[in-house]
Image (cartoon, rainbow, N blue to C red; front, side):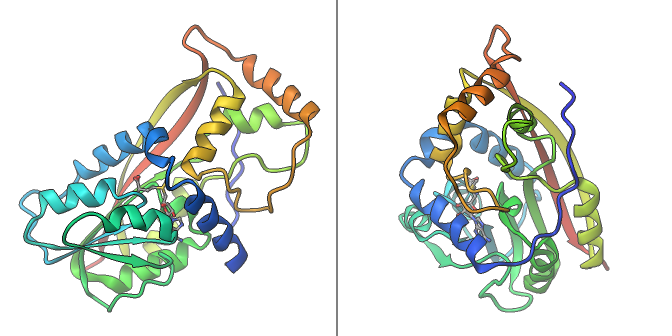
Length: 269
Ligand SMILES: C[S@@+](CC[C@H](N)C(=O)[O-])C[C@H]1O[C@@H](n2cnc3c(N)ncnc32)[C@H](O)[C@@H]1O
């Protein structure tokens, strides 16, 4: 289906936006794992990009959530110090249970880490929540050692386009975040001294209804919309959006696209 995407604007860094994101993920810490099939699959793809025979001393899982990647890093790299960082303390609580991991509750855009202290940074489906990509990449550049590498997965603009399309013409609220185009990511990476290698993947998942998709997003904590405060949707508006969403139904259910970028950042020589 041809969903149009508008270019994501650079949003002002507002503490209230980060607080709302942190609160949404904090509320979902107990339900995240039961909704996280796509997140697991993406994390596995990202972990497969780990450099062979990597022997770096310090590894960071940025936006560790409930610790799925942290656990794999801990097992795969027994000689490394593994740090797990997340904005939402209740998410981090889960990662705290993993033995021999250093937990940090902090914002990815203001890392409480020393300059040139990290050999490998891995971050799965987190950077799309950062409202200032330049600040984020500047921080990654600062904390990575010269030969360090950052492996990131993030969502592309086509993700959830069916959700946005279903709400078009019903109200003027944002019902999904707009995801940053690859060209903007490439620009920010280069401006901050990185060379970027990337791959793109389009996954389609089928849902029974708009309500089920909304339930999944809420269970994941991914229901915070960056550009607005939450407000109530009228039942009539929801019914209209539900009908528009269901008009794409296929035998397997109602298709929703998830565009995933896998990024490999290395400091420019
Ligand atoms: C979709 S979850 C992914 C979690 C984990 N990486 C995984 O693959 O299951 C996104 C995580 O990023 C965290 N997060 C969002 N914005 C962040 C920020 N600015 N700094 C650090 N963590 C952030 C959220 O609290 C949440 O735990």
